[in-house]
Image (tube, rainbow, N blue to C red; front, side, top):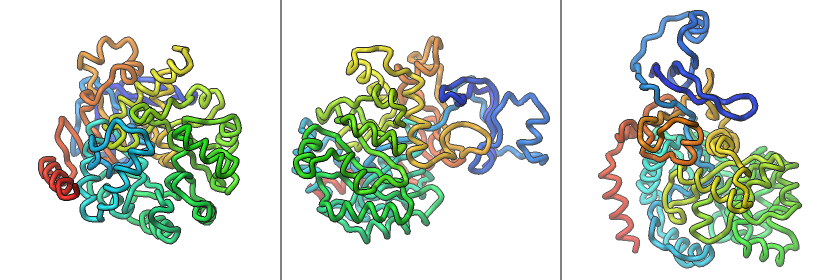
Length: 434
């Protein structure tokens, strides 16, 4: 579909990894951005069009609202919508073993589908255009997401309680062939759920396919303490010595890091994905974001799953990531709004190997959102980037586009299903599972 956005303010990325806001137009042809500019220079326009006239199927007056890259949810368990508000006010280990795992054993390839659609719907309302997912039945989620037009990258969540290395390899090969909207990386759930032999197999598989590897890492003090009791090493040291990061990757949470862990992440070019709301709700702790920034380590932001969050809202995560970093260091200057917004967009895209989806520029994928700047919470416009991080809300998301398709606009979905049908289906499945 060929769409012209005009009368827009456009968030673009500078070479120094900060943002600037320009005014003008953005043109989409099929799944790509073909032009970002003021629309007033004929030579640039002819180059963008390849010398051919273009027939616009839609021309959207943005009303001087903001076009920006979609948020990338860099750690999620989308299927866990069915456990939202099911088991709250518990520490991680009790929550996971006593409530989540027993319910997850009842999941099937069929009953998980509407739960995944429900999560995608929530992503779209929050301006999230891609999720970095760890869950059950990866081929099913790839099909569901692609069917909705949503982009997803998945990572294996295999552990010693379920799955084996053959399944991981099969998912790697099959998911990466399903759609250009779906991809898969090697990974595993966590050190504390996975025996050494399986971890060694995972490392070899990542090396075989030159895959980045991601894993839950140092989420709680208990996790790190018990890993050191078992192996004499932190989870980061152990996974690195097993050869898991030959082709990059990173870790989810990364709350309890020791000096060698930072050194490993820096040396290997790994990404730390912070999940502030989940870490707060499970009383896991506050990640040392300032130290990661000071060390030059890449950062991204994830919501974690809707069972531990309980929402999938990147605006909430941005505010918490910033505010918690400041109070942890007792330093209001320790991390800027620009850096937080970068983590939620560019940082996540690059962690997910979505280099074509990281910013708004000609040649990039058309994964973008339109933000309403005329709501009270976005006024006055002293600093639009800071408004996004500190006062922005899902109520400001007017439109979400993925791969050149508008999937959500003015509170209506265009993903091939009706919201009421999904709500009824999910509710019925949960009642039968209890």
